[in-house]
Length: 64
Image (cartoon, rainbow, N blue to C red; front, side):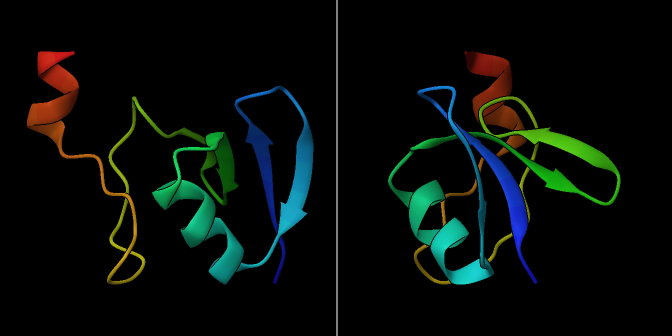
C-alpha cells in the first residue's frame, strides 16, 4: 500500500511503508496521510514503525 506524504520541501509523493520509515528517520517528511487524516511529524505522536523509525514522544512535543 502506498502512503501519501509531503516532504519538507513541499513536494508530494506516494511511498511504501519501508521508504516512509527511512524518510521519517532522516527527518525529510513534513506530514503523511493516515486513515484519520494528515499526521504532522513534529506535532503529532507517531506509532513505532520499526527499529530505526523516528518516533515523536509527547514530552518532546511539549518542550518545543
